Amino acid sequence: MSGHNKWSSIKHKKGAADAKRGKVFTKIVKEITVAARDGGGYSDTNPRLRLAISSAKAANMPNKNIENAVKKGTGELEGVNYENFTYEGYGHGGVAIFVETLTDNKQRTVAEVRHAFNKFGGNLAENGSVSWMFEHKGLIEVSAEGRDEDDVMMEIIEAGADDMVKEDNNFVIYTPYAELHNVMRQLEKDGYVIEKAELTMIPKNTINADEVAGSLLKLIDKLEDLDDVQKVYANFDISDEVFEKLTQE
Image (tube, rainbow, N blue to C red; front, side, top):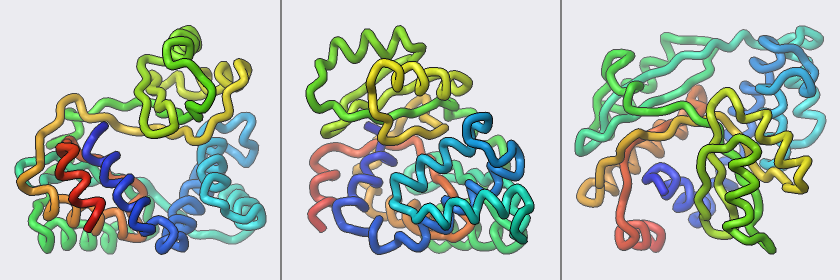
């Protein structure tokens, strides 16, 4: 499991995800709006919108919020024009950090991202500096309850997936970037309930960050807390011992 995934687990156990639900909703609404704007308001024919709505439902967002976000994207309701921008930099120990944003004000966003890097011990770099260290992938999570791991592995490979790992009570399935939606449909036909699906970036190699984990995770948490930031990726890992210590703090 990557260090970034572990940080997500830490935040979940601390209850931070619920405390920041308002921010989570804001980020998902932006994604739904842009997805509907760029690909239309029908999730059956718009894979990006389908993923965004899936994330909204997983976060227990009210249907009315989802419907309004779609309508803002299609122009049925007045909305804000968001644009995608990415930023790259380095954290403690030379860890590569890739930041995805959706914003209506690029100047504000880059200033906030740069401030977070500078204040928490990192540094912003030129685009292209670290993106080559990551690989675009599709990610699907399904429940592991009542399923044999070897059988699931065979079925997900037949569906077109690349690999799978078990994390807690779920199977995390990785797919080629362009095949995420095809694999989702096949797994649903095979009787799987998709609990989460998203396009993501996986580090090609990871750096052990045990000695700088606390400072590094504060930087990542600050970046994730920015309103315009949608996702943050980093190429580090931490040991189980350090992970447990951070979880208990």
